[in-house]
Structure formats: structure tokens, C-alpha cells
Image (cartoon, rainbow, N blue to C red; front, side, top):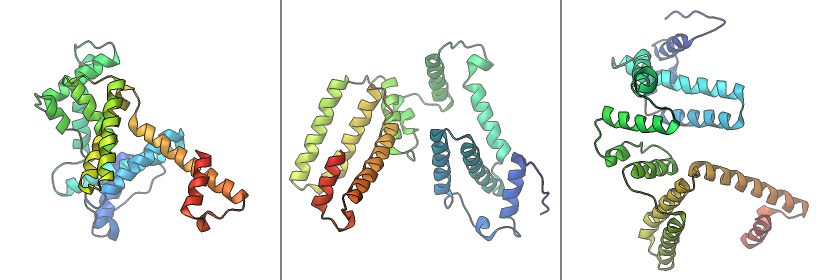
Amino acid sequence: MEFQFKDYYRVNDLVKIVKLLRSPEGCPWDKVQTHETIRQDFIEEVYEAVEAIDENDTEHLKEELGDVLLQVVFHSVLETEKGNFNLDDVANDVCQKMILRHPHVFGNVTADTPEEVLKNWDAIKMKSKSQTAASETMKSVSRALPSLMRSEKLHKKAERGGLCPDSPEEMLEDITLQLSQLKESIAGQQTEMYERQLGDLLFAVTGLSRVLNINSEQSLYCACDRFVERFEKMEENAKQSGIDIQKSTPEQVKELWKKEK
């Protein structure tokens, strides 16, 4: 397969590059990849693009979006090889979807606020997917999502399906109850209950985050950053005090940690 070097490449050039990599004379690694083998790569590239957004780094974002685009093209080429669809078919489908779900732009429907747009979007989405019950929309939420995100989406769809959320105070009572039940299981060493009860507790917490209008995924993201910062500070302070954490007892490390908290 011939390839033309250029000073500036476009999307169609990327398709050609992937096809060349997949060809008999192409790359030994690329030729043997499948949807399954590069599945995790796709997830990681998306997260790296999100990180670039969080950093407000334009150049980094451009690079990471390119990596995401490569994944889209690669998966599309895999299906092209099977005769199922190509990148243009992917673009056509999403264009059709955007036109269908924006009748206030491409049709005669009126939607003057973001809330009205979302309401119309959900109604059109249900109709296009032949969904008649809220439980069907809940089942359509991807199970591959991070569980906190999936949980929030399920709470949201349940609310749109008629299940009004409790007040924050009532939710806190439920969380306290879930925590109490988990404590009892731990005290009784009922290990078979740990996973279920911890899951129920986390699900209840994400329900509270929705009512408080807090993104639980983002909240935990920031908590992770704070944890790393505190641990780093603990290490620095220990070093300044002449303490070797690696040689300290667990109890000594806990005391150091308490000082940082």
C-alpha cells in the first residue's frame, strides 16, 4: 500500500495510516489487535483527555484528543475489514442522531432553556430506542461506566421516572442505617454481607450527592488529590524530623498521619 508523506494530515489520512498498519506489510502489533485487546487503551485515552481538560492545557488536550480519535478510527477500521461499517457510517449515524435530538434547531420545536432541551432530548431518546418505561432507560445506562457515574445516572433516571428523592436529612438517616448494618456485619464477621452492604452504602451516598447537586465522581477525584497531598506532606515532615517512615511501625505512621489530618 502506497503512502504519501505530507506537511499536514487530515482525518482521512489517519484512516489510511491505520489501514496500512493493519495490512500484510504493516505493523506486527497493529495487525493482531481486536476490539477486545485495545478496549482498555480506549478507556485510558479518554481519561487522559479529561485530565488535559482539568489542567486547562490546550496543547495537551489537542494531543490527547488525537489519541482518542485514533481509537475511534482503529475500531472503525476493524469493522470495515469485516464489511460492517466504516468511519463515514459512524459520522453519518451521529449526525442523524444530533439532528433528530435537536428539533429546536433543525425543526419547529421550541426549547428556550437548557432544562427544556434536556427534557426533549430524553423524550426523543426514549422514542428512538422504543423505550416505554423508566426502567428501560435505566437498563440502557452503560455498565462499563465508573460505578459512581453509573449510580448518579440511575438516580437521575429514577427521578425522571417518578421516584422523587428524599430530603438530604432523610438520605443521611438512610446512610447512617446502611453504615450501622455494615458495622454489625463486620462485628459478626459476616463476610458474605460485606460487598452487598458496602455497595448499598456507596449507592446511598451518590444519591445524596445528586440531591446536594454535587458530582460524586468529581468529589472523590478531589478527595484523592487531597489524600496524595497529605501523604506527601506527611513524608516531608517525617523526613525533616529525621523519621524514616519505611522503618517506622504502623502505629508510628498512623500518629504521623493524624497530625496531617
